[in-house]
Length: 307
Image 1 (spheres, helix red, strand yellow):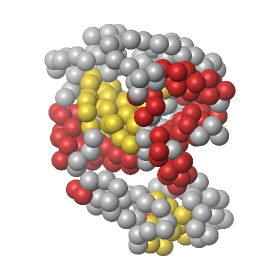
Image 2 (cartoon, one colour):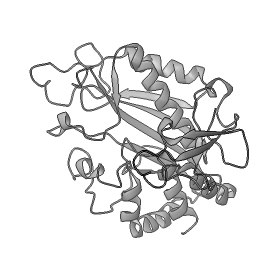
Image 3 (cartoon, helix red, strand yellow):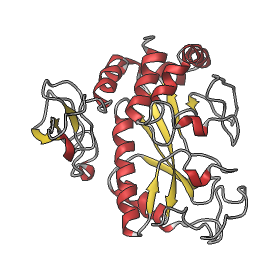
């Protein structure tokens, strides 16, 4: 089943304790608040439909507190004529069953970061899980277009996109699900925590950089539209930060310190880099544990709807 709005699809009246979405209010002791879920195949490729993913609503048919897809879908409808494309770079850390990063020495720390980024060799990377996940995404029909070893040993990234509108969140959630299932087969844990306690030293955190464009941005002269978007994003910086991780902005406090290839969480900044191409901008603030619906919805709302 695939995430879909309440106007379509079968419904399932399920106690909230059996879903990952929390009810709007915490039930009193000894009670269970029913959560209505609806789904309709068709959003994702056919082979990726039987995962049990749903969009959840309370008994009054209002989206539950964690259902960011409902609002995102409405925002994406509002900018559909602008043809928004998104691509998200999902970073994550692989852990052994004892919670220690995969490949790290059990009684110490690996050599300092530097040689691991896009590295090769058993002394730098573990590739079996990564390559199996990539194949699983391809077989599911997801728009996965790259993967690479990251700066911290045991840390990896995969990229999903380009996806139009609401499809960005749908595909990233599915790719995350597949990563967990693949890792299970190897007895390995995946964490999307942007800065686990073990990496609080001189190690890079994990983000989910989000690449954005519209038809106007991709057209000749699109730079002026990017510059206009930067001004809007700056004015709404703190609003975005609260939505850019799964803990109301608190998780990103550990990651966006102004060090380890990040900017400061307190200050909005932007710049221009020319790698021989143009036509999009990249928001590097979202955390690795962000909700992609919340992130892309906020960008649509701020940059392209002016809300």
